[in-house]
Amino acid sequence: MIDRLTLTNFKAFQQAEIPLGPLTLLTGLNSSGKSTVMQALALLHQSYTSGDLAHPVRFVGDGFIFKQGGAGFLLNGELVGLGTGLDVLHEDFTGEAPSITLAVTEGDYHYAYTVAYDPEQNLLPLAGVQLPATEEGPSRPDGMADLFPGYFERPFQYLHADRITPAERYPRDHQVAIGRGFLGVRGEHTVNFLRHHARGDLPDGPLRHPRAKSPQLLDQVAAWMGELCPGVNIEAAPIEGTDTVRLSYGFGDALTATGRRRPTNVGFGLTYALPIVVACLTAQWGGLVLLENPEAHLHPQGQTKMAQLAASAAAQGAQLIVETHSDHVLNGMRLAVKRGVLPAEQAVVHYFRNDGAGAQVITPKIDEDGHLDQWPQGFFDELENTLEQLLD
Image 1 (cartoon, rainbow, N blue to C red):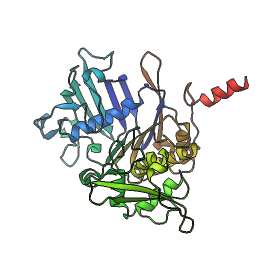
Image 2 (cartoon, rainbow, N blue to C red):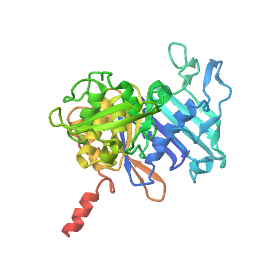
Image 3 (tube, helix red, strand yellow):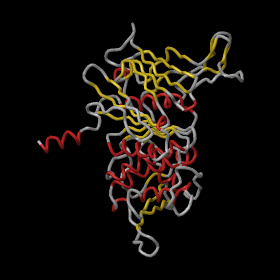
Image 4 (cartoon, rainbow, N blue to C red):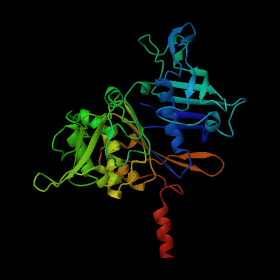
């Protein structure tokens, strides 16, 4: 699990250390730095999987021998498109020369990658790597160094705020959805993933919905989606002769069920939420899930349930980082702590704000009753502010 992300000269931050937990909520006003955290983690992962982030292959003497061909940070790829170096360097960079460092800490291991600045390039060259090693050599007792963060090779999902909308058909890409188990940054491969894994059993644990018809993934998805729209059930089927799949919804039980409906006749909420539900239910132990605005197009009750689903995934061993503008998501997380789904120390909340002097991060603490130890100005206080004006 990633315990801390450190950013230097990257986008909104000149220097910042962001503690992370099994479930971390990122909140705050627009353009305050929340997305920077998500993008940093995705950028490192993207650069590694593309083969552009060099990593050492063996330890020799007092240093590492690096794999040839490593280049640096790939700014534009499958996960993120950040532009060029000019777009990602903090305007008031620290240091004698402009450079960007992204570092992650996993337990006792700290990994830092520094790239040189080039305003016109979208592949920033690697300038330095800090890896966990002692004077005696590799830091792992078995004689092998951990050469890169574990989350690079564990199950990974990143769902953007701009997700799939109701449509007649969705892509049927075996390599992405089945081979890699990736839902796509827009969730565009969710339907095909669900079609393939529909009959697989969900492991016993906090994610299992108590009212689901069976432990099978399709029934579990339907049960959790039923928290958003009672009585819904889902089907995902291939469209013969094409490389696409079809999604449909039904409503009611066997006696009262109506005919199946296309997503285009149901509305945005269910389809927009489907990738979030599937990502949480299939999150694996040690895997990382990045979620942007899971509350989009959902009513308040559904937003609260989404947070409780995320808490259940974290309780089952995954790590989730959630960017949100919803106080209902925050309260759902607090309820999950109070109900014992997730220990208080595993639920982290960060409030981002930018007062013109740079991005700031405030971290209210949650206790075992779901209470917060502070409520900074601007932190989900608009209801109180509005009521005060209405009653004035």
